[in-house]
Image 1 (cartoon, rainbow, N blue to C red):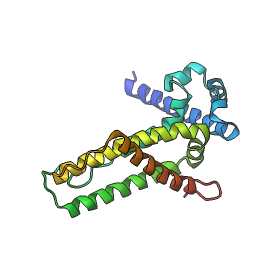
Image 2 (cartoon, helix red, strand yellow):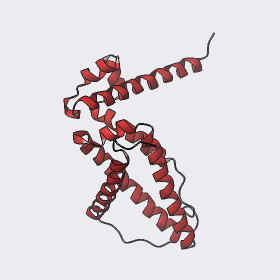
Image 3 (cartoon, rainbow, N blue to C red):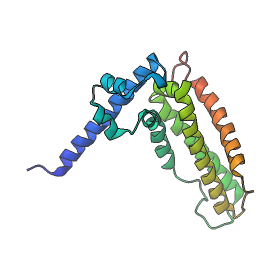
Image 4 (cartoon, rainbow, N blue to C red):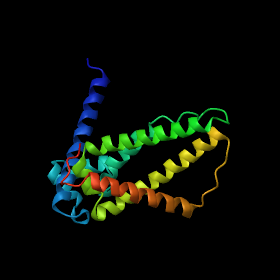
Length: 195
């Protein structure tokens, strides 16, 4: 008699293969046409899966579009906090500064590694109509990261930074998103090797 574990891992592998098939089909279709001109039927036919199977994994094509970004966000959330983040205040500012620099470097390296695994897909989802949807998700994630960094700074130093209004957070996130977006757009250009 077999244990349920073997069945679960087989089901997990099927789910992973199905999601990969859908992402691959999505990438291929995005190379042919704009996001708004791709239907769920197009995706499922191209991926070789049934339409109900698509809905077991994604609620709509926007969720499929954001899936690679969400995977990245989960990986970024798994990074350790900067040194001094959980320590009683006050902590040496040089230690906090070095820790934040290390954390930012780790975030950039993890992002580059993640994007380099699917350079064509990221190039496609960051452009056109799809890009507008992806940029909003990136903006929202940057805001969460900024809030977390400010909370870490406050906890580590005991100094409460100036409170940022929602509009200032949005302005700062927009600036960072555009700056990093330009860097990634340059890095993901088709003429450049993505390595």
